[in-house]
Length: 141
Image 1 (cartoon, one colour):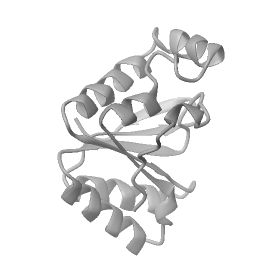
Image 2 (cartoon, rainbow, N blue to C red):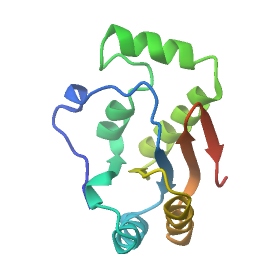
Image 3 (cartoon, helix red, strand yellow):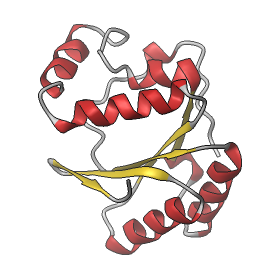
Image 4 (tube, helix red, strand yellow):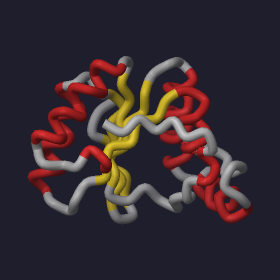
């Protein structure tokens, strides 16, 4: 499991859209570990798993784009008129409340998608969403 705790998260590249990623919120590291172990059993490389926590996680999500420059600010401004803004705000709230946000890059295979979704749910993940091509799919509340 890769735990993202970069001293300088602002140097990470800004993603215009998290296409091909599944996101979810976990209350504790036990749930994160259980889900990650299940994904590794499914053959996903643990480097595809990104765990965010606390203020560092908020900086990585960069809800207003200020940590990644002008283009990031413009992208976040444009996203503010879509549902994506609300999702980012939910993830930020979860991080500030002491929970963990996990993002997993998935290959374009339906069986892996379904198994990853099951792994998130079985380990106690909530607010699970998949960001596909031009669509965000809600997988749990």
